[in-house]
Amino acid sequence: MPPAPKYPSFAAVTMLVLGLLVMLARASQAMFEGGPDGDAASGTDDTDADSDSRAGVPATGAARIERHRDTGRSRAERRARDVLDEDDGDPWNGERTDESPWDERGSETDARRASEREASERYEQNVLEFSTGTLLANVALSQGLFGVAIVGAAWLADVPPVALGVETGNPWSVGLPAVGVGVAVGVALYAANELAAKVVDAAGIDYSEGLRESLAPDTLGGWAVLLGVVLPVIAGFEELLFRAALVGAFAAGFGVSPWLLAAFSTVAFAIGHGAQGPGGVAVTGLLGFALAAAFVLTESLLVVVVAHYLVNALEFGVHEGLGIEWV
Image 1 (cartoon, one colour):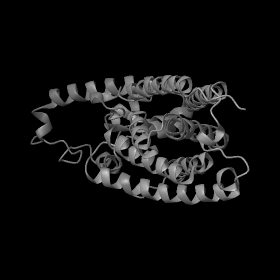
Image 2 (cartoon, helix red, strand yellow):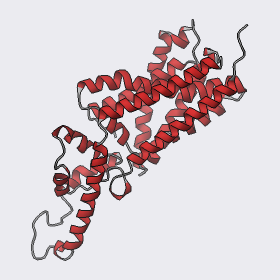
Image 3 (cartoon, rainbow, N blue to C red):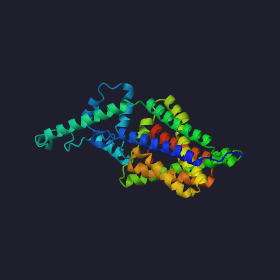
Image 4 (cartoon, helix red, strand yellow):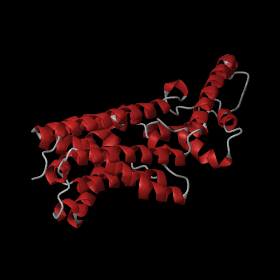
């Protein structure tokens, strides 16, 4: 007779991992809030500041600097920046005359630009301390270790795999049919995610994509590591924690409605993505509940892992790889 599962012990480890993850998420959020005016890359668009801030920066980091200068901007703000860069706000379009309004407040403008330049330089220096490779390794290692902790706790606490959405011998749980369902769910959730992002952007709610932009590689090898290692680790761990443990195991061990637990896990999932701004938290929360619903309905961890991976992979590939903005 198999030993009785020790759900309280498993729950304690799960909540500890969740707390540590939220702490790391807050640290990531703080890193992307170091730009000018308190926003993560609300850096000045002044051309002089651009040239000065790049002084001494390796050429290989030029693309990363340009990408990070947009960190924290909404999609609409990034589109507007292209227009503003063509005209630095001078109503005389660069033609200084005796009647130019800049003559009367030149000192004020110079002081403002100097302050913006200094803040932008501080932000870029902080960002460049973390290479894309370092960030990818950090994310994969931290979430991989957290995932090992959850699996180890489940094993030591004798939590049955079926409670975590792993039913061996059932192809709809661990076989190709489950993969097919996951692909269909993932594509649908990616489209829904894009639509939700458009809605919050149109509403003027801050939706920062800085973390995703920071993780986007600049080399083919980097993309292979991202798509083949980092994103699978992220999808596997987050689904193991937020869906398999917080929903499946807790429902089986404590008799709580899985739908109530789905709501709880959704809130935790959204809070863990605070670095994406209020709009990002809202969009991520909707995604989290959709994944939780898919887990409750299919009772398959594999389905939601595949779906989660596809959402992330498509976002990286479309926006950072191909440079396509649907909205």
